[in-house]
Image (cartoon, rainbow, N blue to C red):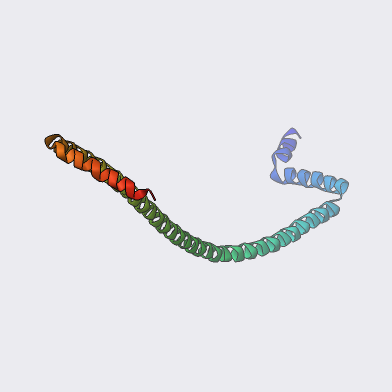
Length: 166
């Protein structure tokens, strides 16, 4: 009998039968149909949730595609506006700098003319002073050379003073 028992225990059929009995007992205790139904419901719920998330993702993708499309146009518009503003600003700066340069030139010319007048007046005054000094020296030299000329000059001055008395 021991041989027979060893043969049975080592037989695949016997082992399979024991495994089937154990599975049947476990299934009877666990209520497999309910467990399978719960698992099926969870899988169906997960599939539905995945479908909803896919739809939401597709909506977001469409929105993003629209935004990206518009973004390229907006960027081009902003670049064009920036270029136009830069051109206007450049023109304004150029215009203002030309006006400022002209004002500086005008101021410099006025200052130069004023300085020329001052210098001219100074030179004229110096020339007059020098001329008077030369005339004085010339008169004094003439008077020293001829004493009669000195007396004649005094007489003429007195005559002129008499004419002033009224």
